[in-house]
Image 1: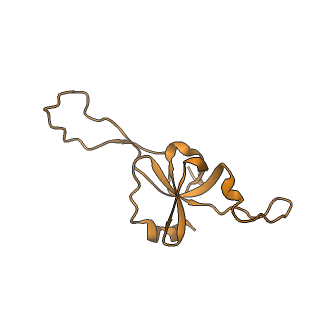
Image 2 (image 1 turned 180 degrees about the vertical axis):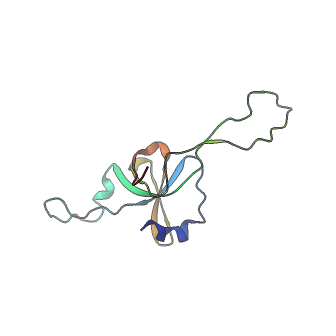
Image 3 (image 1 turned 30 degrees about the horizontal axis):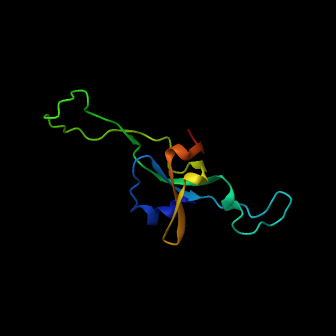
Length: 123
């Protein structure tokens, strides 16, 4: 299911602590069988979606131990990795999400801090 989205989004480079999600379709029926009008689910504060890509993580301040500005720092930036893995189901706060459309598909970019939990099939 998730593999079909990768053809279009391989061009994306996710920055920092951001996560690219494919929103999960909301059920248009209630438990009692009533059909909900379109847009009702978008008002919910908590949504879910599948992780398509994740950024490298939180950058660290590498090389500040010497504190000598004349020394050339050849170290590459180091990152604290994110918990998001491709294919995870993420439960996130809608208020922090940014919706985009690419290739007639809707995606959501969410900061890692707005994700409440992940549901992962394997550990």
